[in-house]
Image (cartoon, rainbow, N blue to C red; front, side, top):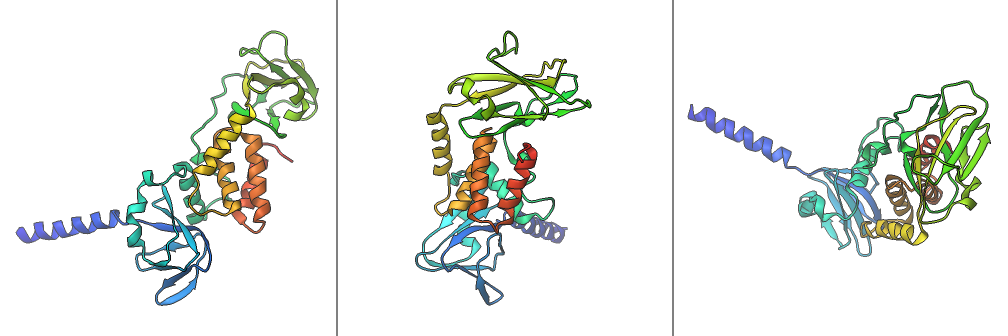
Amino acid sequence: MNKIIFLSWILFCSLVGRTQDNRYVLYNFKGNVTVVENKLESKAKIGKSLSNTTIVKIPNGAAATFICNEAAMFTVKSPGNYSPNQFKDSCATNSSSVSVNYVKYVWNQLTSHEGSPGSNRKAFMSTVGAVSRSINNIWIDPRLDSINYSGGDFPLSWKSYADAKEFEFVLYTNPAGSGSPLYKNTLEKMKIPINTFASKIKPGNTYYWTSAVKGESNDEIKVLNYVPKPVYDAEVNKLKAEGPAFESEADQSYRIAFGLEDARYLAEAYQYYTKAAALQPDNILFRSTLMSFKKDYEIK
């Protein structure tokens, strides 16, 4: 009996030890960083998973940024040879200034081979759209339920269940979408660029919009917050400050784009996704995310 209890205890300790093992992925690096596995040394690669026996060599002037346990990101800049066991203290989520949502998203992209890269961003974002309550021939994506806008062009779009050829876009200053509209336009396309009516809106104000098949009405009202530039700049600076100690300009642009999309700055997120893809045109994740974003928001 005692032998059974002893063996059970050994098994329990073994299972606990395994659950406490940390997992690491190489997020980014600069300089001649190398990885040693099975006595073979090779150049470091972004997305590389590290085992307990892996040695990461960081020479003078180099740096490497890692993701641990899907939720923490940290950078090692001191030269030396490192094993994953030396990084345990850096695996606490609260030790990372980078958004946990973003870290989990990048971990998923680097370790998962399912689906198109960048297409599942919404699953890792905090904001969700409201459930549509109206019953009519128009469907407006909940991702456009309430957006922040500071500048640049971006389309407000919708879908139609009817075989209609003309649609009416209406912009209000009244939250209920009542009274005389600030702007009204008849369109053949199921979208309207914000630049079309940008001259009629002012920073610091909130506007309300909807669309309908011409001759019909739609009580589903969406929100457009015209954010003053200093407020938007503060949001961008906050995202920049949250970055790891080392991050390339392309990676920073991509991370900022993700943060802005999560905060509903869609026009501005589009600019940063575009910048990231332009800075690293061979990066499949950046390029695919930009294509997915454009498809999501009807950008041609």
